[in-house]
Length: 325
Ligand SMILES: NC(=O)c1ccc[n+]([C@@H]2O[C@H](COP(=O)([O-])OP(=O)(O)OC[C@H]3O[C@@H](n4cnc5c(N)ncnc54)[C@H](OP(=O)(O)O)[C@@H]3O)[C@@H](O)[C@H]2O)c1
Image (cartoon, rainbow, N blue to C red; front, side, top):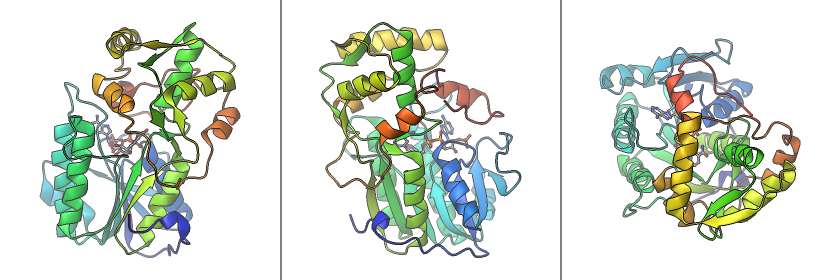
């Protein structure tokens, strides 16, 4: 860890240079874009969803990712001072894979270098590990390595779980608590999780973008829960106190698969269960976000988990903006 931008003032100054965000119509990208627009910056986005509802009233210029045409991607990146990269895929699916995301991100880094981008703020994950048997964590580690070896000026942010109105995991825990009379945790549920608020992550990203030194920061919030405590806490906040039972991970996965069929989504993958149980979503470093999940959830207790949030729906419907809880 080199420096934590949360400890320094944001010295962002609006200028003619472009701030490029991947996925500005997505989740974390939207919050980063809003902060940059508020600071008077010129904001562009690279996206797979060029026809998604433009929530920025035309203030964000849209470019397609063009991973298959690196020349076009280089053109889109010319004049960019900071590239904020949120691009990734959550799991392997017949229409997208972690391997694609790794290859495409490497192309993005190469094109950014060629286009003369000055700095990359790259969103990774807590505990990336090059030897991890979990493709998510291995792929993220490989990308961090590529970025460092590229010689570009960089900041890497490593969030655990990101919570906010468009979040999936916390919302769907609440949805499960509302829908079912009991809540199952995989194994003993004692593995930890340290959620960070999406706006805190966006602030860290923008601050990191305005600095010059290379840095790797764990983007984690001030509260840490065991998975069991997280389910209990959310249950209390939304007034759905359910018995929390331990279930073997294989059985939990089967149940999740059935729920996934019902809601037309991938509820949770085997890999995600393994990652969760291995404690990959918690770290020992000091919190870099300030917002308490408990306070935020209390403010949103009436809406949290009222509707299921579907990852696949976001991938299939490329026109509507992300639904929020
Ligand atoms: N969400 C979390 O709880 C969480 C936790 C830890 C780490 N992270 C990391 O934070 C970053 C941002 O996450 P986010 O939740 O804010 O992501 P997001 O907005 O849903 O997506 C970010 C970008 O990736 C693209 N993308 C996502 N899934 C894709 C798929 N299956 N196929 C093709 N493109 C896809 C989006 O496409 P469009 O351009 O079409 O919008 C968007 O450009 C990611 O790198 C993720 O690994 C997230």
